[in-house]
Length: 130
Image 1 (cartoon, rainbow, N blue to C red):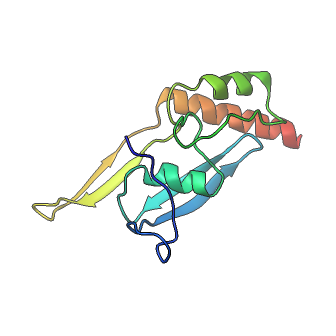
Image 2 (cartoon, rainbow, N blue to C red):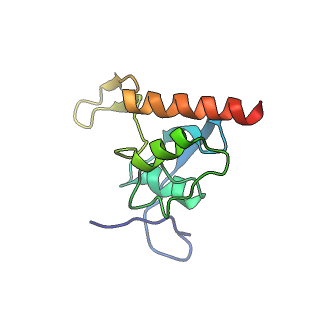
């Protein structure tokens, strides 16, 4: 498998990729980000988040070395260490069908493990702020 990278297209060959980001929630241990993709490149969200030093929890390829957040509770630390997958979820997808051109959309609720992680982030944030 290939590991992708964000590069300056003026200096290196590559394909352009654009992801708009919106911060939804922030905590010392991590944040919840809404990503809107304008292109569909391989590992696009993972590459872009890592490039701006906000790698995804549970991402072995782009996450880098695990760092324990200084304000994290022991429960949060263990949950971050043992999160079984990349903390990435497509809650809503919409695209034009490549053959028919018809607009298609799908919505999927957050999985339980993701909800648990967000609950811990919220609790730690409230405890940290006081």
